[in-house]
Image (cartoon, rainbow, N blue to C red):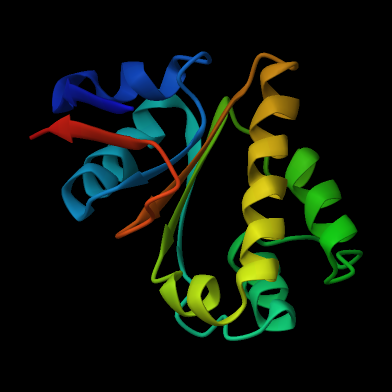
Amino acid sequence: MRANLLAPDAAQLLRDLDQANVYVTDDDTARALFHAGPSAGFNVYRIDLSQARTEQELLRIMGKALHFPDWYGGNWDALADSLADMSWNEADGYLIILQRSEVLRKNFPAAHATFLQLLKDTVKAWQTQNVAFWVLFVGDHPDLPHIGVKT
C-alpha cells in the first residue's frame, strides 16, 4: 500500500483514525508529519534506534524517549502497558517516528518482530478509544506499508 497526500493535509491525515497504523516512510514525510503533529494535538516523538543492539537496549531507549514513569519495568509487558496508557502524557493522538532500526531488524529479528507486533497491537488498542496512534519507521522496511506526503 502506498498513500500520498499533500503536506498541508498532514495534520488532517494524522487525525484520521482509520489511517493510523505502523508504516515505513522517507525523511521528507517523517519531517512533514513531525511538524504537523502539534497542530493536530498530537504528542510527537522522534526516536533514534541505532543504539538498540539488543532487546534490553531497545526497551531502555523506548522508555527514556517516551518519558515513561518510574514504574516502567523495561520488559515487553511493561512496554505494552506503557504504550497503552499514556496518561502521564495525554494528547489527542500520538506519533512515534523511529529512525535507524536496521541494526535491530537485521541482528535481532525475533526482538524486532515482537516489537513490530506490539506496536501494531497498540495502534488497534488506541483505535478502540478513538485515539490515533501512529508509528513511522524511517528508511527501508519491506514488510510494512509505505505512506508519504507530497511537500
